[in-house]
Amino acid sequence: MFADRILSGMRPTGKLHLGHYHGVIKNWVQLQSEHECLFMVADWHALTTNYDDVAVIEQSLWDMVIDWLAAGVDPAQATIFIQSKVPEHAELHLALSMVCPLGWLERVPTYKDQIEKLSHKDLTTYGFLGYPLLQAADILVYKANQVPVGEDQVPHIELTREMARRFNHLYGREPGFEEKALAAVKKLGGKKGKLYTELKTRFQQEGDEAAVEAAHALLQDAQNLSIGDRERLFAFLENKGRVILPEPDALLTAASRMPGLDGNKMSKSYGNTIALREAPESVAKKVRAMPTDPARVRRTDAGDPAKCPVWQLHQVYSDEPTREWVVKGCTSAGIGCLDCKQPVIDGVLREQQPMFERAQKYLDDPTLVKAIVADGCERARKIANDTMKDVREAMGLGY
Ligand code: SF4
Image (cartoon, rainbow, N blue to C red; front, side, top):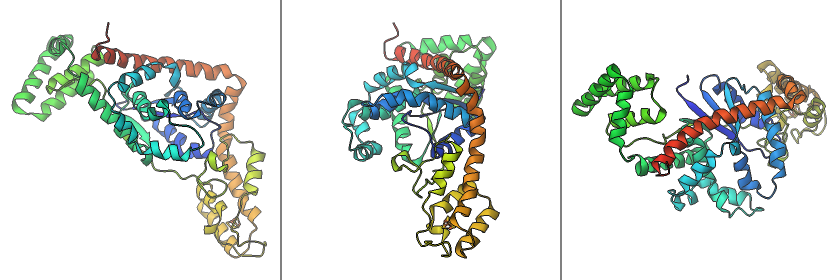
């Protein structure tokens, strides 16, 4: 069992490219061996901006999952699921919407940014305003305590934390809390129950922090407690309200600025991408067509790698001796630009080779992908359903 639960997701709105691989998926592959990970196909999120072009969502969805698997996401280690197949996300989103002040959503910085950026679309919709709240529900419904995000997404995690706090404050003192907590102490069994009560007294009367730690360890180890009872006993220990929705932390991921074919950040909107599983001949064609230092008009002109987009890709794909060869050859006109591009082509193909190999079995038998996702949805739903039982009960809907 891992101590941390991580949730992350991607919108199915088009083909994945190497920018997604270097910026997100490589990190997932690392995380999945160290933490419990849930990776979500965020199809409802895709609808918040693509509500008028839904065909792209279904087209991209299965391809995206194959890309994840090809890139090394391992269904034996991580749970892969589709957001809309776990309706508890929508239920918690609705529940949270009852108590989320409008101003909290309006002040999320990405709201205005995105409206400006996507000005060709009418995003003055209820769904778009509420998408950070849907994100909060995505995280809280799994009680995920770590969410990998870039700097720009930190305000969304802050909103999630505020929502959890507000919810716990409003509903954490469930009716009959004390009786339920005492019943949970009994469930610990005679010896452990007695120890818990002693530790609770030591903390409440003497402020002994070590007693709290010991009680936490005791509760973590108690196999026969439900999640709800365990949280009641955490709260009872310190005489606080019950934490129904725990606050997550942002797991800051280093910003990856994977360069695209024109030197800008690789992005679909700049049209400068190499797809994750782009055919080798197409990779070669695209790299060979890349612009270079504009001062190198003729083969005999010396160039400056710092002014060349190809050089940025050498930073990702080439080793030190190759980079030295580029600097020397470019600045002395000793190599041509096509010679210089070949190690980049080789590097991209080397990176993609195992991805093609891993993808093949899923392309040969698409039912394998459907089975992985069905299994993931079931696992995700079990966790989400446990949370929703507590949420419904806390909000007076437990009948
Ligand atoms: S030799 Fe390489 S680094 Fe120099 S301009 Fe040509 S492609 Fe760019």
